[in-house]
Length: 403
Image (tube, rainbow, N blue to C red; front, top):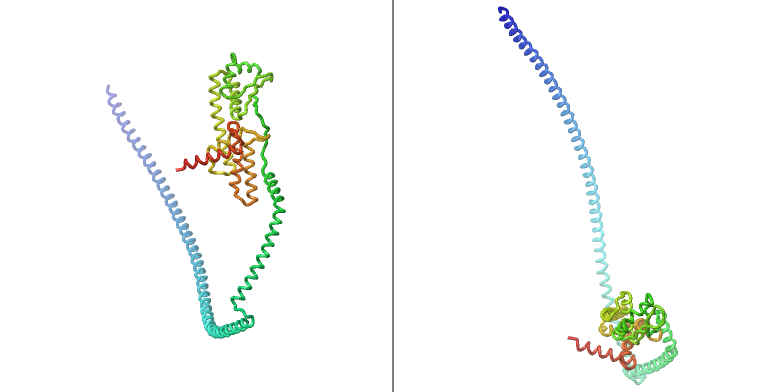
């Protein structure tokens, strides 16, 4: 029991000594760390100073180089400016010398002009004197001639002019007779050449004349469907289109016959569409024919407008254009009348150009010369008279319709 206090006291003393020694060791470590940190900071400061010195030196060198380059550029510009100023100065001096020389030459010219003016004034006086003498001599000679000839100057002039006029008329008559004879000899030859040239310069395509149209069928069974029950379909087609539908032994074909080419075309297109569609009955036939009529009418109008445009004509009445379009479905003497009319229009224009006549008037006459054939199957009379009446009536309608 008596040893415990000593042991406790010794332990306490040992702990205190340990704490003191640990504090001393920790202090020395901290001081060593501080010394190392201080040395590191000093090294960083020294390197920063060195780097800043290097940057400052580099900046100074760059600035000196920039100043040196700027000075060199300035010297070059100053030298160029001096050269330019010297060149301008030389030009100014040269111009001054030139102006001095011009002033000197102008003064000399003024002196020369003044001298010449004096000489011209003297010459004008001498010329005036000579003119006066010449006039007096002319009057004297004229009086002598009148006395010798027994005629005045006016009478002699009139006689001479009359003789010249008679001679000129005689020569002109002979020339006119010679030209007229040559023209008669060459007229027929020239006319043939002009017509041949016009035909050679424009030629169109020809088609054979037909009064029937053939509709091809996919099979002969379609003929029975076209005829219909008790013939109602074929009667409907014929009554609506106004054409005859001929169904004979021709294999896989139906013939449409009629003299109206437009109605025949409507019937052909309608029948082809009905065969293609397969639905063939009176109501459908009427519907299809109505649509085809509208399409053909539109095609006629477009054909007329295209013919007028292609021939370069303007101001043609709409009804006349429609008649021209109808000629697309008309044939005559193995030729399509629409193509023939355009062809004749161009040929007439070429002939008119050769004869120095109005090309547009000739083209218009050529384009319209057969419009009577568009309706000659409906109106009695020759197609030329029918076309003339149509043109007159249309022009009359145009005048009445003008504001």
